[in-house]
Length: 180
Image (cartoon, rainbow, N blue to C red; front, side, top):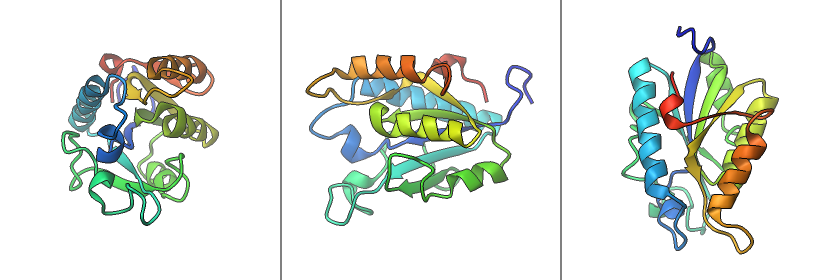
């Protein structure tokens, strides 16, 4: 165990899906975020840390219903379903009805490195719920994103959530600072 971080860590990638990433509205700094997440995947694998990838599943008939092309994880995302754990969710929380908490407990994970999209929905909720469940959430400040809204730019949303979540709800780290 690395003395720089005394608790076992896992990587959680949230909703990096074709329909969300390549939809009509493009995510802010999407290519940079994708590249940073791929760096995190490789770092986790090198350290033997588990990699989890959540896939948001819409209701039947929705663009991201289970099995649809837009529901799939991004082909450029280096998740490997033969070695990583891919799971589906229907709510903003990666924990609600997914079995993720049980998997983390079984693996002895106490710190969860969180990256992906969308910042103001699933990233925010997952950080908050992880903390409620007694996990240390580590939000990778340069590895989550969203789209502009009518009221706020995506850049402002990401900055706001880094400031709001950082501290009591998550420890903020940059990609290059993360160690598994």
